[in-house]
Image 1 (tube, rainbow, N blue to C red):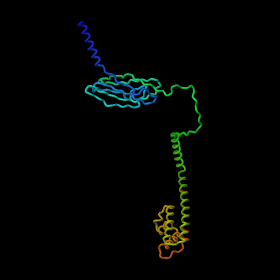
Image 2 (spheres, rainbow, N blue to C red):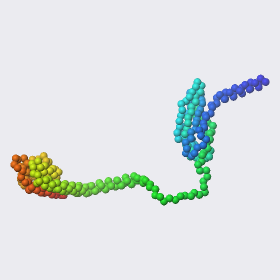
Image 3 (cartoon, rainbow, N blue to C red):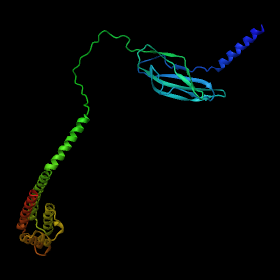
Image 4 (tube, one colour):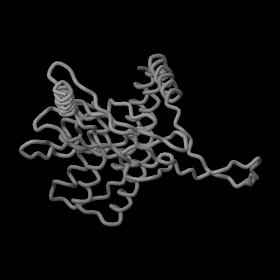
Length: 297
C-alpha cells in the first residue's frame, strides 16, 4: 500500500515537472476565411512566454510557402511581472491553385547556445476561385480596329548610328574640312556684301533728299562698319590719314578728305554722290581681294 502511494506521488511530481518545463505553443491564424489568388490576406502570430526571454519571429528570409510575403508589422512586447506577449501580423498572398491552403509559422526561443523552434497549430484558408469551371471552347470576338502601340526606342542601333556618324564626320573634316570652311566663309561674305550694298544705296538715296552733316557722318560710319567686318581692320577707330596709310590708295584719300571737309568744316554741304559711289565700288574691290585670298589659301 505504501509502495503504491509513493509511486503515485512520484508520478504526479514527474508529470508536474514535465508540464512546467514545456513551452506553450504560439498562436497563429488567418484573419479571413477565404482569399483570391494574388489577394493580400493577414496572418496573426503571437506568443506568450516568460518575461524578458529573447523570442525571434520569422522575417522576410523565411519561406512562407505556399504563400508569398507582401509586408509585415511587428508590435511592441507587452509584459507583466511574470510573462511577456510578442505579436506580429504578416500580409501574405498566394498564387497556388489548391482549394485549401495551410500555414503554420514558428517562433524561436533563444536559449543562449541554441534556439528552440515552436510551431503554431496549422491554420487553413479556402481559395476563392473566380473561374469554377473551364468551358470546352471559348467564342473569341474578332476585331480589326487599329490599336496604336508605342515603339520601343532601339538604343543599341542609335548608339551604333551615332558612332558611325561621328567617325564619318571626323574623316570628312580631316579630308575636306579646309575646303568646307572656305565655302562657308565665302558664302557669309557674299551675303554680307549684298546686304551692305542694298542698305548703302538706301542711305545714299535718303541723303540726296535731305543733305546734312549728321547724315553724312552716319553714312560714312556705316561704310566703315562694313569694311571693318570685311578686312578685320578697325576702320571705325581710325582717322582718314590712318586709313589711307594702310590702304595706300590716292583715290580713296581724295574721297575721304572730301567727305570729311563737308562734315567737319564750316562750308555748306555739297553734293557727294560721286564720293559715296566710289566708296561703294571700293568696297566691292576689297571684297574681291579678300575672297581671292581665301580661295588661294
